[in-house]
Image (cartoon, rainbow, N blue to C red):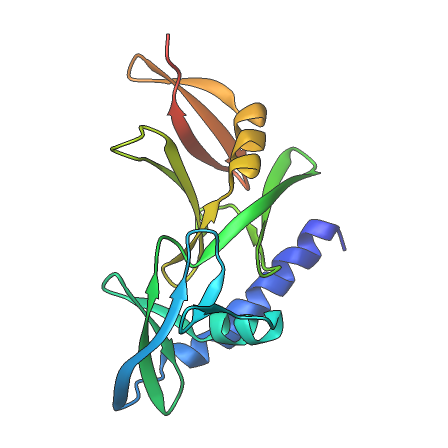
Length: 185
């Protein structure tokens, strides 16, 4: 079994185990002073979490509903603050298999995501700075901000495409094409 096939099998297994958590709908609701900063660091009452294992545990029960973020257990649902995206994808790699290629991102928590039609890449442009803000869908409406170095790697591997007479940079992964942005002339 190829590396890509093994990775896809692991991702499917993780997503299947997460489906049980989707049905949790506890009656006890509130908020907790937890914040995830733009760089993906987690804070409780202003202090950074020191144990990555605890962050991974909380990330596994993180849910997004109507633009708000919650930690959800069978017993309670607590709102938290997320400054941008809850994860940061700082590394991207390419695996080529036959005629296909897969772009694999690794988040700040070590989770790996394969860009495809279920995990699309999207790029917003910041209104103030006009800088690109790239994201990849992780799971259940949760996204990872694609870090600057990983985005530069994507741009380096991108090719030009023309759509309706306009030129764009795009990358392909698992048979899906993702537009990174226009090519200025």
